[in-house]
Amino acid sequence: MIEILHQDDALLAVNKPAGVPVHRSKLVGRAEAYLIDLLREQVGGPLHLAHRLDQPTSGVLLVARDAAIAGALGEQFMGRAVSKQYLAVVRGWPEPAEGLIDYPLPGSRETGPRREARTRYRRLATVEVPIPLGRYPQQRYALMLAEPETGRFRQIRKHFAHIHHPIVGDSQHGRGDHNRLYKQHFGCHRMLLHAWRLNLRHPVSGAPLHLEAPLDAPFRALLERFGWALPD
Image (cartoon, rainbow, N blue to C red):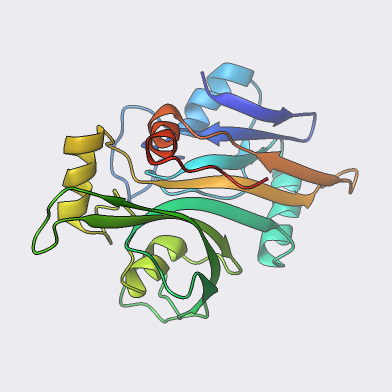
């Protein structure tokens, strides 16, 4: 069952599981299940995706009940009227602890034209684990809050990789040695990026809509292990 965070006659907000593709796509290939199909079976009726999340990313996903509502939600995203907050675990301790990554990115094709892309970030917590890897006897990791101001393809993943602090578990833009460390020592087999909070206007009533998706068990277990707490 897909966890439903909000449901009314116009839209649903769900907590997308990590590893489940949102819909059929040439980028993800064939999969055993797609979120939009699972959700149609669960709630019934027509459903239209209002935005996307990468297959390995978890968290808040908006789904409209009809095409008009999907269009209205899409306009809010395109107009940058939606506030998005993501949680990520990255290699190293980014400095400064708070900043803006302003680095243009291409679309889904790396050879395509680059467009403006900006991600604000804040370091929430750090940890140093006594596990040797390469030439370092200990490894540093940080819990980050990321707030993308634009919505480019894999923006947060590419931006953290650009500043040499890739997201743990990212097989395309991350570090394989650190990804393996998390699997072997922490039993964590997912990419540690989660769409945590989404703030927007309801497309029908215009009322503020504040959505928050709880972390799944593997992500939550890491926070507990490292003694990390989420901000209010």
